[in-house]
Image 1 (cartoon, one colour):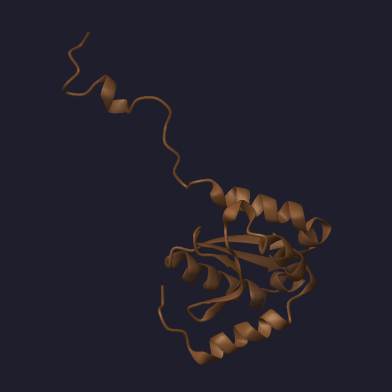
Image 2 (cartoon, rainbow, N blue to C red):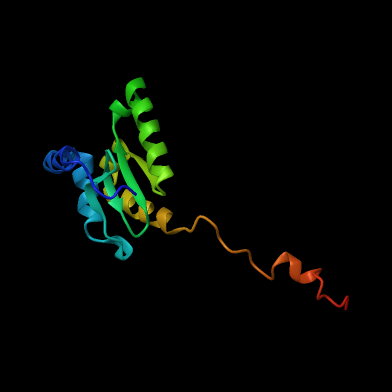
Length: 139
């Protein structure tokens, strides 16, 4: 991840923290309680972008998307930003602002639950090669 951030990005993040939307405020009220012990930051800069919420331990960005994100210019910007974040190992969860307004507690809980699921889960049972490998005596 980029180490140093340009001052304008940091200043913009600080400004955005003071001007959060209602859905962001409602979700922040839940995420700041450190659900499942995970610390979230609000309006966190990553490279040239600022994500709504970020959990470093999970490498997870949470974005609350309102109607403006359905416009073509925003779609292009979001795709560019998502590609940058993914390239730097950050997973992204996008939540509908309407869903957050309806039930911020459930949205925070489901986000943390989803993020806690590992990307690659181990298979149950012995590895496939254990049954037919070189060392197998052919019982």
